[in-house]
Image 1 (tube, rainbow, N blue to C red):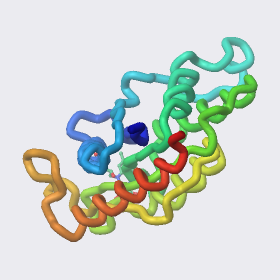
Image 2: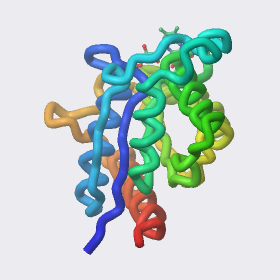
Image 3: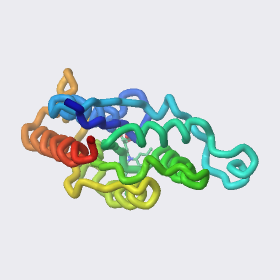
Image 4: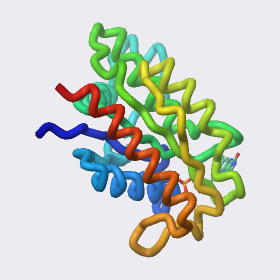
Length: 191
Ligand SMILES: Cc1cc2nc3c(=O)[nH]c(=O)nc-3n(C[C@H](O)[C@H](O)[C@H](O)COP(=O)(O)O)c2cc1C
């Protein structure tokens, strides 16, 4: 049997990052839903701030090519993002901007993957305002097909148990459902 391969990462590399905790919880749920999960940290794929002159002189950084190849090698992607000033953090936007430039070299195999997105914040609405922007950016930049459902984890500093699960049943159930949907839809790409 071939399993859906799902790539998971967070839009923060901070130690103790809340979105990294959400990414870890999602990775567990995805594995429980029988996906083959790859969890990465963007700290392993550092990229300069996008600059057109830099691209012209040095080309696309190898880390952007590597990330594009990683997405292409998976059927689905889960991104957990923080909210910065009502939107996505620069790390995530810059990473997606660079990957979207890989297309300019003629390879765009990372497109048409199934994406699910979530946010976390210690505020009451869990970084919800970042998600419409993230949705637009991954659709435009990565040709993503998005699961309509999403998850926002509010009061996130207290939301996770010591073993990394979401403590409150309603939000834990929401993550379970979202991860199952991601696996179900991604499985349709498995041949
Ligand atoms: C520049 C900046 C802007 C922020 N703006 C928001 C915001 O608009 N809404 C919010 O809920 N939290 C905001 N925060 C708080 C972050 O969501 C919080 O620090 C979060 O824990 C960061 O994600 P991480 O834990 O995954 O690193 C902001 C933090 C920074 C550094």
